[in-house]
Image (tube, rainbow, N blue to C red; front, side, top):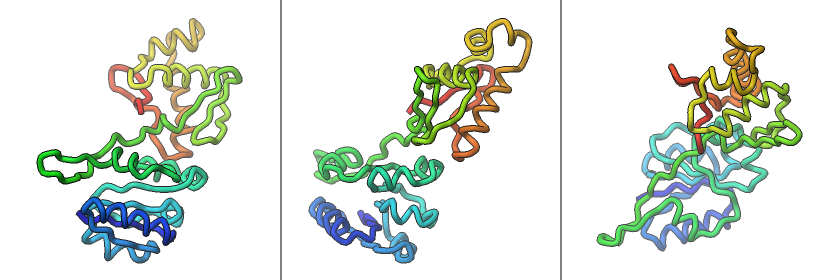
Length: 215
């Protein structure tokens, strides 16, 4: 199995190359994004330095990619890009890295890549309930009291659709009865979070309401 290691950090590339070689993989090293296209033709998995991704979108390919970077490097990347890939924060323990992304076949003694669950945009959302402040990927989102209450309701029930009737009762009470105020406020939230960050945090579930998918 050929593994592309794309990073300008020579020491880091050398370390990864040795670790993969010891486990029977063939490492392919790219020190710049311009070197990636040719190597991608024979690779089965790519490990890409966050610094290279910060230079722009990666070339198209059909196999899995893991982004490696320090916290500040990952935080500077567009959320829409981050959610496309698996990410590992540096520094990391190499044994834990292989435990996360690879599994051994006891019969054949071979190591194979396995796909962990991809990140959901909800992993980048945090709520300060005491001060009624929302943060997405560390950035403060200005919300009204009702917007925060609706977002909090959806977040606390992530993975489970919240009906319009339930949201109407718990967030808007009698004042919203007989109106489409829930739909209006979902659009407000999408305008402040989904659209600016290029993600789909709040999903419409036909006949059931709205949901924030669980991580």
